[in-house]
Image 1 (tube, rainbow, N blue to C red):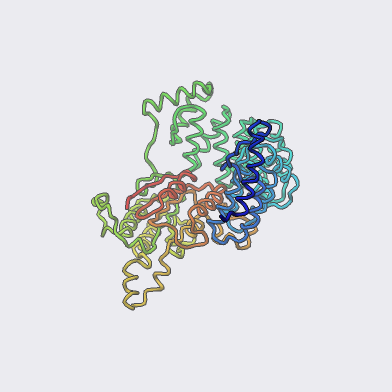
Image 2 (image 1 turned 60 degrees about the vertical axis):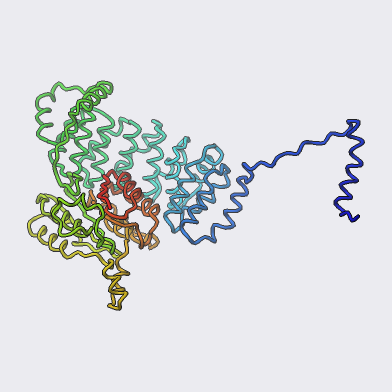
Length: 530
């Protein structure tokens, strides 16, 4: 009978082992099961990343590849991730920052801090500082403090945020001079960081900054004086409420409430009357007393919330610098499916466009003359009504209402039907996509093409402080199409601008994107239905 070589060898081996086993002189080790957990170590993951990442072209694949490094606790991952901080794709840069912020052991954290002290390139320094701030890594602050004198103000700003997180009183003297930095973005970061630390040194700095030319700096100063409570700030905030307007009135009312517990009252006369009556002998309530006052007020539903200012789709704002961003892509031609919700609106039709135009015209008509506003319509391209904000006088409101009437969905179903039967509507179809990134970037004066040569000065000193963003569709065109990349770019750019974005969704929208955009900017999300 035929027997294979392997069988012969096996039988021979058993012949040798069986006698020994019978007398117990040879022990056979138990077969060890193969573990399916932890087979791939950090070195292997890094090797695979270096091999394949450069081959990926799809943004989603590239982000997923970077996310694969999230659990790598090896110092060798640090230079790999730092290299990605100069990637042309913002979603890759933001993901690299996220991964750099997730270390759970000291070895990679210390490697990151060491690299920060050695790095001279501003863009890499900024990204590393953002990761350190996001990860809230504990350290001595030496390498970060050295960044306070960097020639690039983005680095100085990011370093202040990191130092603020450390809450190390010994670092405060190094931070204080930047409250007078030539860049307003650095001044705001300095006030924000010192206030977060609870440093008393912020008081004279913030009090002086109440009259800064840049409204974002004044906003940070107001917030700082509410967080670091001192009686000397109270009359100054009341004085400021009598000259400020719009959104900063809300900021002032919140800070005054944080000092006194009297409620976020937005009427300057009420605060003036209070100070005239009690200013000479008033003492701030203790933090414990303040907490009790606020809890009692909320429990009694006595929170003072007068309706004032502008309202659009049920969202009220006291802002006097408003930009309306309106989707006119092809899908806005479609009718809403939940018609019951709109039956009492007296709209010309149930099309999303007619509902949007009607509500916008009504809001514009009701604007007070002291409000400044503008409108952007967008599909594939972005079209502003005016070059900048204009006063809501009777002439501008008439012009705006006439411009709103002319808005039509670009490349909707009717255009597609015409194109299908040879009536040449294909150009309109191509222009009727949803360029969400282009619209939001234009609204905030963020470069629409981030890969282009950066301007010498970041145009973050925008006059607009509130945006109403209405859209019915998922992004389908633009420099960024993925909602994660759009969200990352807008939130990053808006960190300096401090613009509130209220999002209004109608139709087949990406609800989570709209919600997160509003939440990330302090705005309100409104769901009008489909």
